[in-house]
Length: 270
Image 1 (tube, rainbow, N blue to C red):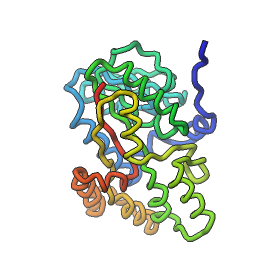
Image 2: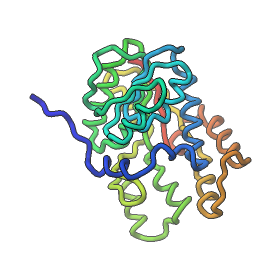
Image 3: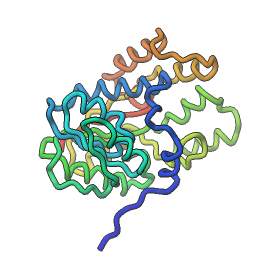
């Protein structure tokens, strides 16, 4: 018998200690990520009521508005704290689980979301397993939405927040740009950063429809983050925030700008 996969303990520990429930609501870049993700999902989702499986759904941040929109939402997450938080959201159910080995029966969901799992799986075989599981539990023709963190986001983030002149920082960024792997040495946990080309290739490798890819935050997130970092201002609702949101929308038809976002969102069909 094949043993079930396990999530790396440092990932569980990171999310047990951090406040993921507040991440998308307390800074302008977080709100930009949330607003654009919701906007893109609403554009592609089938009408409610439809069954949504939110794999790696965390504390239920997206599950909450999906339930409010009339969808039937079930969250699967490997972090006990997140499952407790998601279960407390009205209209949402949740269970402990792993994206690579879902308990759901085949063809039971109209929508499967993978908004977090892919960027915590260093190995391609694990990412492929998660995508295969999403395809298995989706009904034929069902929507699958998978998010990645852009390979170039650490470089841009360092420019915006800490500078990049130190040789040690440059070496780390150089390695991440080359390999995609991140060991969790600065403010985050173990992660894997993808290019849009790589994300597309892994989705099609499991037999899913050639995906449509979007940059979530667009190219303006770096300026917003830099201003918040160096002035201490919260830019939510300001002209600068609105400019970044408009830029994200304008950038959508231009694939060359997709990887300039911090996150990439791919839509495909089972």
